[in-house]
Image (cartoon, rainbow, N blue to C red; front, side):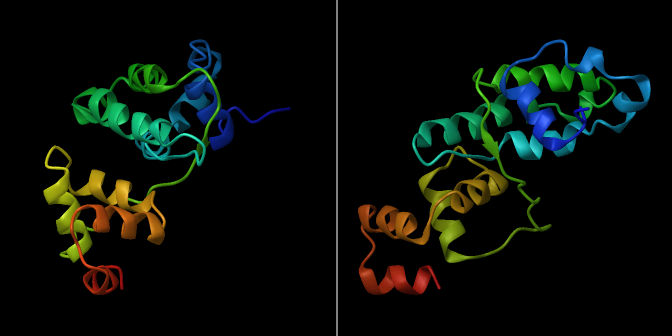
Length: 156
């Protein structure tokens, strides 16, 4: 029997927009569903072939699910349905995204990305940075006018 509350099955239900998944849960299972945990997974997709998919999940989770998230805390089914709107109809590989530390970090790299992507907050920038390899980050910094010796210091 498949465990409907394994993260793999939960993400599959969200990615494939399975509108009946939440209704198929027992009352006990519904109490165990954690929309906050699901949101952390939904926002972080790894897809080496198409980086637009990663950006889609991050941006749309923030726009549709994260906005007024606490106000909807008494409506977990609605929160799950909002996450399903983000899904693209096909299962993706989701990775846990740990929450940022309180107060953030004053790393040079984070500050650079906050300046480059003014519409993103610290947590979103942190998610974005974590999706890139060191080579990718180096390329981004180089494209934005940083010199190789400065890039080396920034990426330490």
